[in-house]
Image 1 (spheres, rainbow, N blue to C red):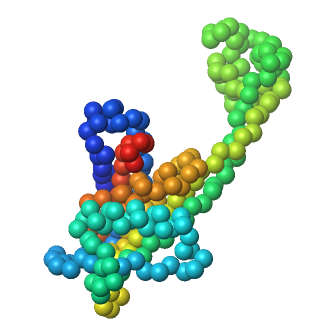
Image 2: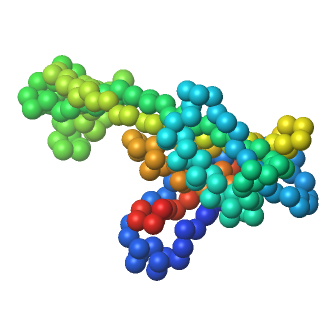
Image 3: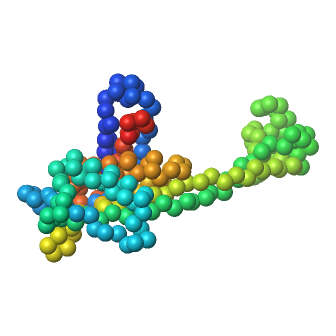
Length: 221
């Protein structure tokens, strides 16, 4: 069963004074075996593969670091850590071809090949034969001169995965996957909301998919 979680970025007045706000909706799935008590929350980030160790990845790492600090975790800073944290993300461009009917300027019901002269009554003075009956509704697909407008819309599907393991034996304690699909081209614009969604109600329900809504102030982030 999916649950809806609202994460507020501030009061309504603060949003009005601070500028426009955008709400991001993501599907979040969490699996965890988080202990009831954890005295040592020191951690280090796992080193990603060389091809993934980009400046973009490091900028998102800082977002994760900020959420961990908010939850009471601390960077080991060279000391032996109790936990290791890994992160990966992907962005997939999904082009969608859209076909829309356009009314022909030459259309007139009198010249429609299915026009029935004995059906001139009712809505707008005529009915047209439609699958064995008569319909008062104009349908551009029935025009003798059909026209179509083709366009391509881009949807961007993003996935963020964050894992926390016990450093001593690599036992997994927390795995979360965040999925978001939107028309927003810029991943850096969306990633702060995805990271915040990943840690909503940490550690959250285990083995359950839920919808998380995060409202971000565009000026403050």
